[in-house]
Image (cartoon, rainbow, N blue to C red):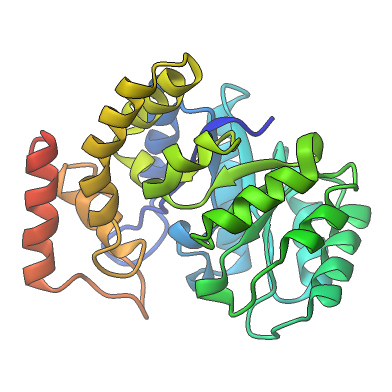
Length: 292
């Protein structure tokens, strides 16, 4: 199931900060038309820490209904509470998602044994295919390859979004897990290197604005045209880097608004980017050839 371009979907808000349901439906249609393989709503890029559980599941419901089976929906369901995460998985399953992304528990700082027990319980009781999410820069804990290997033996644990930026760690995961788990890049700037060591795709931020270009990069690599894949990688790289001038998703939402995609502001405690960084972002968009 996990392959190609999965977009970490932004959440559009109205001027009053409420969920913009019409715009959310429009974004899903944009990705259906673009050929995006899957969407990941209710994750970091979606600003999931800032909304209520009612909004969380309404977003999932809207995305699933608008996708209508035309692309996969893997919803963010992980928290730092095992019990709450299982409740989220059960509710998301009822709403019709294809799978769920579950982050390593943050703030608690569990041991490797704790991570193993947490994810095994989610896999046993959640009733969904799971993509684990390792992002130590945000959670304060790194899941080691040996832990991933143990978890990969569970039939409901099918993938791993790796955002550690540690290619050696990712290579070890692929080496010791083989076909038991699908590794997806969690960093747009590392998509090509991760494909080169055996990864199968990316959970992308920049795919919110240029999905067809990310799809082309992956497709051309899979076709064996490494020189053209390198060219596309280096063309995309400055745009990918611009998405992280400030904390994600501040730059990607700013970029989407510059490009008249109308997704609204971020919610507190995130704020609008500094003016000097908006100028850098606008230049990156223009240099890429996007209309600003």
